[in-house]
Amino acid sequence: MNILYNSDNYYVVEYPAQHGYELVDKRTQRGTFFQGDVADRFAQSMRNAVSENASVEHVDEFLGNFDVLMNLPLVYH
Image (cartoon, rainbow, N blue to C red; front, top):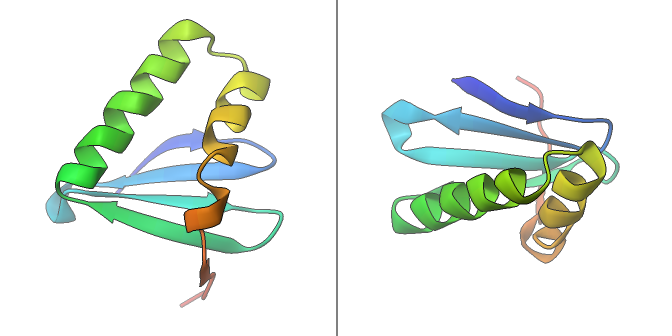
C-alpha cells in the first residue's frame, strides 16, 4: 500500500499487489476502487494532471471529476 496523494478533501492509495487504486472523498466519506486497465488509465490521468499543475487545488479539482463514481461508504476495519 502506497499513499500517493493526501489533501484535506481526497486521498489516493495504490495497492500494487492488487494492481489497483483507491480514491476517497474525505468530505462525503465515500470512495471507489480502480483495478486493471481502468487503474492504469486513472494513474496516467493523475500523472498528467499533476504534470500540468501540481497544486492541491488543481489535483483536488481533477479528483472531483470522479465524485460520481465514489459510491462506496468508508468502512474502518
